[in-house]
Amino acid sequence: MVFEVSGVEIFPLIPFGVALVVSFFTSMGGVSGAFLLLPFQMSVLGFTSPAVSPTNLVFNIIAIPSGVYRFIKEGRMAWPLAWVITAGTLPGVFVGAIVRIKYLPDPQNFKFFAGWVLLYIGIRLLLGIIKKDPKSGRTENIEKKFQKSSGQQKGLGSSEAAPGFRVETVHFSLLRYTYRFYGETFTFHTAALFGLTLLVGVVGGIYGIGGGAIIAPFLVAFWNLPVYTIAGAALFGTLISSIGGVFFYVIMAPYFADTGYAITPDWLLGLFFGAGGFLGIYLGARSQKYVSAVAIKVILALVILFVAAKYISGFF
Image (tube, rainbow, N blue to C red; front, side):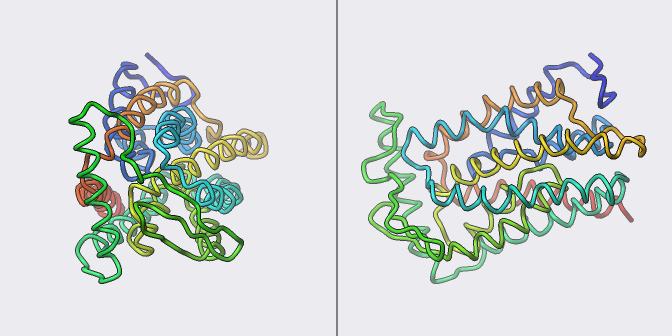
């Protein structure tokens, strides 16, 4: 089958299957998997025009709702966190889209840029795993108790979160957000997160990932928030910013028609990727509570570093 916008010729079940497998594992950490589908599209499928970024965002729009639904159903959606992430990444994505179209249309330069973004994410994830920060001890203990309790419930035939494992908002303001999870409270500065997500939104708009692939590891590695509590919010923020990003790419396309580059998304290719991701993210969100937090972080870190090394070395 030939996809007209991208020029890709491939059996439709291949993008479906790749997206399913990738998103199953990455969604456990609050990441849709779009950051890995981008190199697959560029290196394997040969889809190198700027249109690959909004196509990746189309994948997010179709795939993420299933995971968001699952986290909401289990009571593990930290809504204030989700809205702060959305408020910062959404305007940033608009700026990133312009940068991608105007300054980074060449695939070689884009791959080099993407490689450094992925390297940053991977290193931060590994540091969070290897470095024994005393402040992270409480978080690690809660994650272990949650995973153990969820496994026991699975043995009893229950698919819902264990009692007391719902994310409960204690306080939320423009300066601070505090929530409770398994009897423990976690606090961070709202304004600081907003500033971070604004910058991440720009990178996400350029890279076509929505920003969640950077936000989620940061919340885990720097602010020591339990991965089981931030995954839903990170995915939700990625979903909303992706909708805005696709909309903006479509609007901007006529203004850059003279460049000769394809800018609007390949909707059909994005649909096949999204369909696989829809199933993969749902299964990943459903399975997350049965998988150890360390395993989730290690899988993400290793895959990210592999892709980063390939892109950076390929530039030279």
